[in-house]
Every structure is written in C-alpha cells, then in structure tokens.
View 1 (cartoon, helix red, strand yellow):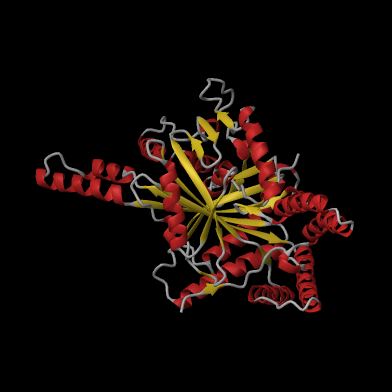
View 2: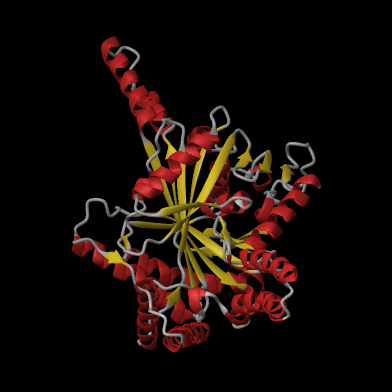
Length: 503
C-alpha cells in the first residue's frame, strides 16, 4: 500500500454558518441592516434597493474569483493594469542595452531585482565558496544545493514510508533549530540537448571507422535526444534576517558571520538529506554554478553552449566558461496576465489544490513528463515552517474556531456537514501532533511549463492542467502573478509565494 498523506487542515477556519469568518459575517450583517429597517418602515422601494446593495456587498465579500476574493481580484487587476500602462512590468537587461558597468552585479527582472549574491568563506576539502543569496526586498538569506535522488517510482510502500518520515524529520529538525523558516524543493526537467554525447562522440569516434556504424550512431542520437529529458533538482534553505542577524553576532557579524551560521545549518540539512530522505548527492552551489542554473532557467536552450564552454575550458584555461551575473537573467521579459514572456520563451504557472482524499508520496511525478520535444516542465514544493510559538497560537485559534462553530451550529439547530466535521477533526489531530513536538508547516506547490515562442503557449498551459488533474490534483492558474510564480518555481534563488516585500 502506498504512503498517503491527508492530515492537513485549512490555515483558517470559519466559525460562522456557511464557513464565514468573523469579518465576513460582520460585513454581511452590516449590509443587511438597512434592508430590515426598510421592511420595518414598509418602505418597499428602499428595501429593494438596499437588498441589491446587500447582495453586491455580500458577493464581493464572500465570492471567490480564481482562488482570490473578489475585492482582492479587483485590487490586483487594477494594480496590474497600472503597472502595464506605466511599463513597470517590462524588463530590459542592461547588457542588452550596452549599459553594463560591472559583470558581477546581478541584473534580474521583477521580484528577483532585489537579489544580491555573495561568496562565502572557503569550505570543504576543495575550499569551495558557496553562494550566499541575499534578498534585500524580503530581508532574507538563502543557500541552494543541487541534489540527486533515486526517485520513488520503483520504490515499495516501506521505502516510501521511510522517505516520508525522513522528510518529516527534516522539517522537525529545521523547526527545532529556529533559524530556517522555509525549505524549497525545486525540480526541473530540461530538454535533452545531446551536448555531452556530442563531446563523447568527438573524443571516441575514429575517422577510419565503418560508415554504417557512424550512421546508426547518428540516427540513435537524433531519436534519443528528441525523446529524452534531463532532470535537475535543487533544495534552498531560506533564513530571515531577523533570525540570522542575532545568531551572526556570535560568529563575527557581516557576511562571513552569517555564512558561518548558514554553513552549520547546511551540514545538518545535508546529513538528513543523505540519511532519511535517501539522496545520493548534495552539492552546495557556488556563485558560477548558481548563475548557470539561473541562466538555464530563463533560457533552457543555452545549456548546450555552456556545456561546450565548460569542456573547452578543461583543454584551454583561457576559455571563459562562467556565466556573469549581469547576463544570468533574460535580455528582456514581459509579464502578461495569463503567461510570462522571457527571451525566446513563454511560461505558464499554476498552483495545486490538495485533494480531500490525500496525496501519495511521489504523486507529482506525472507533472514533470513533457508532452512534446522542446517543452520544459518544473515545479516547486515549498514548506514554510512556523515557529513553535506561532504554531501553538495558530493551533489554539483554529481549535477554538472549530469549537465555536460547532456550538453555534448546535445553537441554531443546524446539522454539521461531513466536510465541517472532517476539518474540525484534522484541527484536533494537528494540535495533538504539535503537543508531541512536531513542526507546523503549510506546504504548497507551483508548477510551470515553458515552451518556445514559436508555439502557442495557451495549448501547453492546457496540457499542464491535464497533467495536474491526471496526478490527482486540481490546477489553479496564477493569473496576474505569472512572473512571481515563474521566479519561484524555475529559478532556485529562494523566492516563494508566502512572503511580502519589505521596504
């Protein structure tokens, strides 16, 4: 039997009838008072007018538009329209305009504009300098590692259960450390470009070899390259400045002090990744490696040229194989309401609705399978970790809300629905787990499909939705936020959907 996880609960429960929250109930009640007053005074025309107003206010307060409240959708649409008219949603790289002054300066669009990359002190036997990601807009620090995992596709129930416990232990360990407040897993399926095979053939093919063997190898390469994909997996640890700054005072302050604290967290997380979760390799990225991952995220087709440059660098040390941060982003990018345009590519992102029946460990695998050659799929699974104090308050508030809702329904002699009962039971189960020392996290996932501009991206978006439904989830397009969703689910720089920018 497969490992199924279904013990998740809503972040906020409504304790009034019909699942309304307190402020929603107050607005609906206030808007209905003029209606009852007009009926009392027998002012029928006024009652009809106030009833229409009440219905409009209730619809704006309670109704949802593509996962958002109606008021939130109106505000977001207005802000997006203003940004488009003011050209705030358009990006042109300084390198494309010939205005680059420092190649080491990061030049990225949108929410990535506040990112700065620092090189940490040497570590390990190779004395590698791990890239330290500082995001000035959200006041966070992050480090990213490339991981290799054997996968869960051919694993039995016992192995899946062990990996699931390993993930839970990883989150609990991060929560006990009280530094890392978010762990991001990012997986990309990169279209196979055949760069490594081309180099291997160039090294091993003999000029005097049989012509028939040469033809067979060329045909095999053409067929296999078009039907193959390459999987890349990353993990990013995000630490807020409010926590890291206090811990860094004991390690020397500054960049080096913060790097030393991050290095200690990296060692703990790496041990858990290789242990309970079964990863075979964990490699913390240096600044050039992170720049390459960033560049191939925006332009998947550039990977072949980078691989060729790396191979040429081994033969000739004068060859520059590094991707400068000034050119790690797109030459141009435009945020559209329903997709994101970057260089010669378009991308569409969607989030997932967790099913009531639960999710099987490894259920996201079908989402990564491309439908045609040249298509790139990727997804982000984020685990925001609440501190013990916040988790306790949130659990107590949710339990009080569930009890209050049950009491109000019994007072009004309303039958409790099965859905409301299941939500209340999940809240109580969550409180019991927190009391035993488990961490509280509110995971979410974002999936993205990337295709060349020569094809219709809307068709690929529909195929992504079909893959999400086939995996057992319900898709929800992240309209008006496609640029943020792309940056979170494709570029491993520690961007997530749970943080609001800070000045």
